[in-house]
Image (cartoon, rainbow, N blue to C red; front, side, top):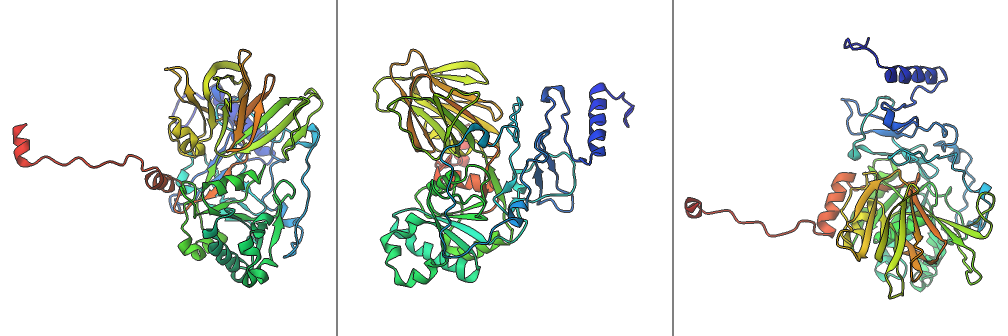
Length: 489
C-alpha cells in the first residue's frame, strides 16, 4: 500500500526495485521511466529550483550507456596544453577516417523515444550548465537555464563578418579590451587578419602579435576555445556553429549586421556585458542542431573534397562516401537549376510518409523556424521546444501543409525513382551539393546543441526578436467606440 492507501501497482514496484539497485551501485540520480510508453531508456533528469532560490536550475543528462562516456566538466581543462600567444595553432584535422575512428553511436545511443536525445550540457573545455544539488524530477523552466564555469575562462574566439568596413573599429576595440584588460588569449581566423584595413594598421600590430590564428577546415580548435564572441549578423552565429562538429563553447553574439534575430547584444555596452559572461553571470538557451549524414554513390565525375568526408567500410559498401554535418538552421533540398519539379521521397523512422513534388523541402530546427521555413509558410517555434519542422517549398498540391514532428525521429530523404532530374542540398546555406539516384540524406536531432548566451532570458529574448526583427503582429490598434456610437448599438 502507498501513503494514500492505494495498492502499489506492478510498474511502480519495478521502478522502485530498479532505483534501489542503481542506488546500491552509487547511481542515486538515475532516472527511470514512469509509464510503459516511455520504454526502458533513462531520460533527461533535471533538478528543480528550491523555494528560496527560484532563478537557477540545471540539467543533468542521464543515459544507460553513457555514464562513463559523457565528457567530464574538467577533464579537458586539467589536461589542457599551454597556449603560447602569437603562435599559430596547427593541429591538422583528419580529412578521412574509417568508420571505427568516428565516435561510435554507443556513446550517445539514439533511442526510439519520441523525445530528442539528451543534450550534452558541457560546452567547450570549461563551460557547463549550472547544477542544482537537489535531485527531484522537474519540468525545466526555459528562463532558468544559467551558465557556469568550472574554471575561469582564459581563451576566446572572436568571429567577425568578413569584408565589412563598419566592423573594423568594434573588432579592434573588443580585441584590445580582451587582451589588455581581461588578459584573454584571443583566437582569430587568419583570413580576418589578412584584410588590408587590419593588416596595414600600424597601431594594431602590437595587439595582433598576441593572437592565435587558425584556418577553417585545417586547424582544430574545439578543445582550445572557452567561449565565442560573434560580431555581425545571424550568419556569424551559423558560421560559429559550423566550426564545431561536437561540443560547442558558449556563444555571445553582438548585433552588428542587418537582421539580428539571433544576436541579442548591442555593442554600446560590450565591456560590462562581456565581463558578466566571464564571471558566469548569464542566462543561456540551448539551440538544438540537426545531425545530418549524406551517403553518396561513388561516381567517376564526383571529386568531393570536404573536411566532413568519411571513407566508410565494414557495414557500408566501399563504393559509397559518407559526409556528416551539424546544422543549426535548416537542411534544404531543392530542384537546383532544373526547370522540372523536384521529386523526393521522405521517410520517417524507415517508413515512407510522402513524396515531395514541388520546388523542394526544408527540414529545420526550432531555431531555423524563423528563417527560410517561416518564409515558406511554417510556424514559428521557440528554440526550447524539442521538434523538427518539415516544410515544403511551393508544393504542387493544395493540401501539403508544413508539419512538426518529434525531435526523436529519424528522417531520410532520397530521390524518387520517377524523378526526372537530380536534386541539390545545402546545410545552413553552405556546402551545396548535388544528390542523385541512390544517394540518401539522414537527419536526426544532434546531441550537441549550441549554447547561445541570452541578453535577458530565452523567453523574453525570443519575443523581443519577433517584435523588433519580424514585426510580429504589428498593426494599428482599433479605436474605441464613442458614447454616441455605443448608444446606437
